[in-house]
Length: 424
Image (tube, rainbow, N blue to C red; front, side, top):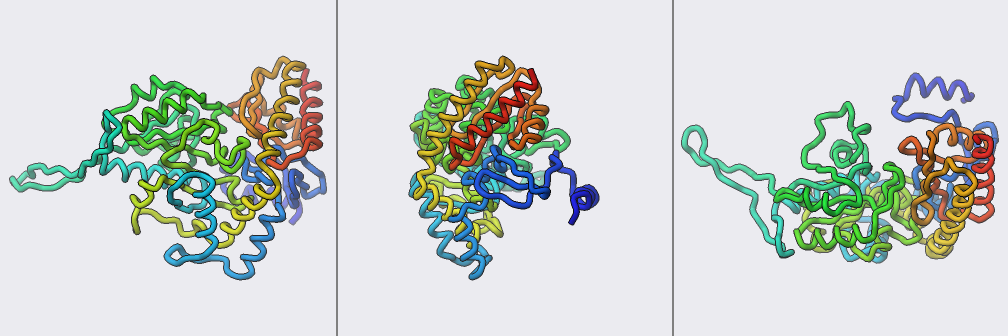
């Protein structure tokens, strides 16, 4: 298809749910993309972190090619070895627990919300940290004098945070602390209370006898690359332990090495009760995962939750390829070193260009806050062959592949510097 024909087909046949950049990519390798005209781009924002190993990593492709020639799909009422291998690897790298497989971060978060509510239906808030159980069933008198049974909601409220982003499905959207994403889809599902990020007092004030969990991102990506304070997270873990609340950590963007550790929570000296993963885990293919601690692992029983395509053979082979590459190619070490190098280069730009207000983040998940709207900067960078992103109007996001090189960072910084210089 010709360029204009592609654009026209999109206009006539595909819902306009994305703000599209008029680029058509046809090939990718590592941190590089080629458009339909053969122009080369340096990709420093590969799919919100999906491309953590760049495009078409050999170990991911090897697993996919091998599996797709043998067996593509197995429904989840049967077994297959690669789902077992991936689950074992995830538990080995994280914490003792059990895994639920889905197709996206939103699906993983939906599973976490359902698990938390099911947990809350049979437990109650504790003042001393001891778990106590309640049946959640009450009786009432009917109009004709007969006694009838009603099922109580138990604990179902989940505390989330302003500027959070947990997905586009309705429950995940209700958990998201940004009204702009919720507008037009009201009424939101009940049971989500948003409070200020990094504010323990606000969390404590929000806890009631209906509270069952606290859900947060350790780095709010869509919220502007806001990093959770270590003291806040430690205190949150302590509060959840004391009150018999579940701590749900959304690692859809931070998980699988993005922060220079396999999982972001490992920077904080805590373990979540539930963790959700997606994006980088599949090496470019769609996957979502919820991991729950052992004591929570059997709460969801057959018929309570499902995902038709979750954890299929092909995607599991891709994810196993991701882990193989990370281990054999020392990806976490490279992320740490290149994250420090990129941060150093960005701080030099900050010193030279006053429109850069702040640089924040962790590993290779960095935000550059400007004093001006960032859209024009992004557009100019794209014109010069550098793909980056802007969120919250003024925060540029850089999330290059974790195997990015110094040479590629120097090229990206060179383009960024040129754009800033011409803006002055």
